[in-house]
Image (cartoon, rainbow, N blue to C red; front, side):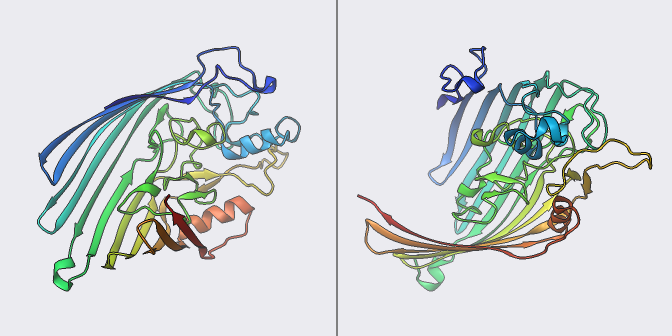
Length: 374
């Protein structure tokens, strides 16, 4: 299967305020995959994606918000790359992702194994010479070098108790983070789209992290803290709806996620799914003060405002639950209740964002759905 997708089309411009004279400043995705089946219950899929990204300025979330509020030019709120959105250069980014995954069953056991490698370049970022709150960036052109892998093991126990399904699982997902904020490498992995929310294994609807969480740093559908980074906020992939507003950063810290969960289906019309996902960030980041963000120059005392360093470590645990009740083959009731218990990393992030006030409150989300298929 091969597909060519227009994720951003610049030929149809509806506003003179955002008009661009270039007709090829788009985002084009060329992707394909091929499957090989070992047997009816096992297959391996090889995939490749070329993401041609244009017209996405290199800004962090603070810089993008300040620019949209018309604050960037006179208040000095420039975000993590030191320039306003109107002045930020949109780099020429060419990102390639190649990988494969195996999905199969052997007896009562189910297996998943997946790996992906991302490479490419982001040229003419306009970041050389910019002071990002930590140091002065030395490069305009960056190499994209990142990777990710995942694995999961499940066990179907339905025959032991006579239910439709009783299936526990345990798995891991790892995405590389950017290790050095001073070099010309972007080591923080982002997919073409980070969509862990839709995973049948550890995803789910109406979760605390998978529906955008700016403190944790996730954009819609993903678990990767792509709004955070260590100083070079170059967009290398991610949800196009947020593009240019600080997501998809190639300098993100990366995650290690350990997931354990269970699917319980005592009757064909009743399903309960529960997952406990434990997150750690792999690399250090720098976080901006969102309460008092005005950039100040070096004072006579020799002090200046800078971004707060947040060290890698345990970020927190998400506990996501969903109950599905089929009223008929056309109508379903769903209820979700999710919790996020912050770890030391998120406590440090809240302190940095607020300018000193640390929070360790549990985040809670409760939702209900009525699905009626006609």
